Image (tube, rainbow, N blue to C red; front, side, top):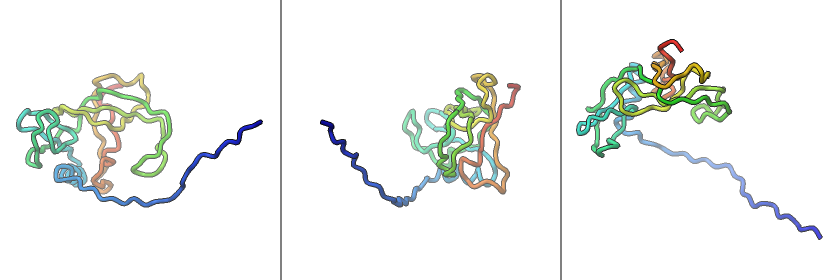
Length: 161
């Protein structure tokens, strides 16, 4: 006697989940400066001296609140301290399109920063990448910038690979 298989229970529906997000004065200043001048701003904790890039409102080490007055221009160069090559497709949440692959993605620490930024890198050959290699932010031209992280499409190597 064969057993009857039950179909799994599912509910299918389309929904709209609109939301608004307030990024706060520090992120607002960061993105405004990136859009208008192409400059990268970091923030320094007055208490412990730790430098955050991208900037944040609270020091992760000593929990001191930081303000826009603690922000300053960072170098657009730094080091690539971790790296991977992504070899599978996924939908880019910024565009809704499948992101071309392979692509490089790395942990970048700008000169003078104590924290890393995870971002795209223009290299996809792991044999050409080494820990600590120097990289530079590629910033879109002024007329193309929108005040988002996409204004920095990727970081490129500044030394021979």
